[in-house]
Length: 129
Image (tube, rainbow, N blue to C red; front, side, top):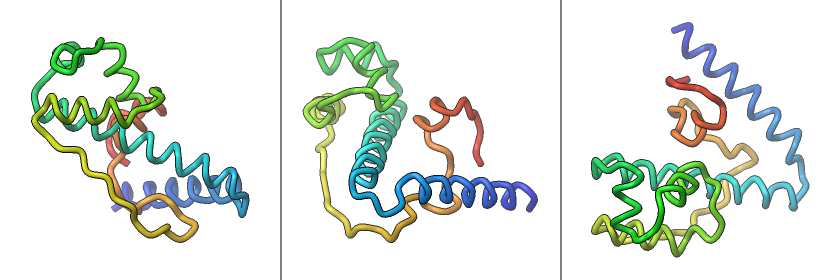
């Protein structure tokens, strides 16, 4: 149970930092929302590739790009990712689906969720919170 308490404390502290950074500034909210989408896209690429049992190089070959592009996609460090996401999904016999969802209240993080691949890479964290 102690691990859950630590995760909650970390989550609360991170949410407080996000609230302090974003506050009611629409420009900062837009930046945060964009980065959240980038991280989710990175996680999608990573999950699809792992589920298909492919290396970055193997996926790149199927897509017709380089392994460095796949690596940058998985690190949320790639501009114009929508066309590339379509290519990756198509190479893995998938269809990309987009949807618009209602804006969440001020907190943008899900409580008690596992640390995602892109977050682990960014923070050096290897396990779950």
